[in-house]
Amino acid sequence: MRFADVEAIRALTGQHRTPVLSDGDHVVHETWDIACYLEERFPSNPSLFGGAIGRGMARLINVWSDTQLGSPLRRVIYGDFPAVLDAEDRAYFRATRERDLGMTLEAACADPEGKLAAFQQACAPLEHTLSVQPYICGPAPAYADYTVFSIFQWARLGSSKEVVAQGSAIAEWRRRMIALFGNLGDRFPGYPM
Image 1 (cartoon, rainbow, N blue to C red):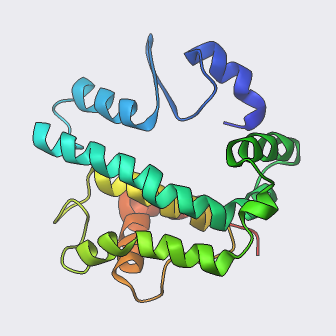
Image 2 (image 1 turned 135 degrees about the vertical axis):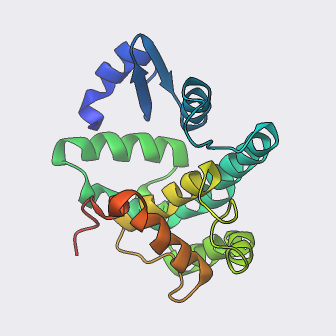
């Protein structure tokens, strides 16, 4: 959904952020809440969490992904994002992100090499985990993989900067995640080169 459709989102959900899931008369927003809703609504489908204990661990990974990975990554890639947005959406993106950052996108993204190093340091637990198992969740992907993958997909599609070291365990995991569901991760245009 385009930024220009913020009013439609607000009318549907009472707030202005995506993602949004509408299932009949039931509307859910926020990634975590959508995952919990899907888990409860479709109990015969493969579990996103693998049970109550897995749900608890997935919540931690969700928060870690948003705060420890997403936060430093914003300061690496946000400066590139306006180039992938529709022209009429660029001002909204810039205004809202600069308000949240407390500075211009250019100032936030100054010293990209140093900020990329900080992001890669935050990835160390992920690299270590993926060096001994194919997915965060072990032998197969589940919610924790999908939520962390969203951070890397966000960077891959919205920025020219490669944030994953070639040949790393994270790079191989990202390749496997992109290939899931009939190569779904590659069906979207990437950053214009």
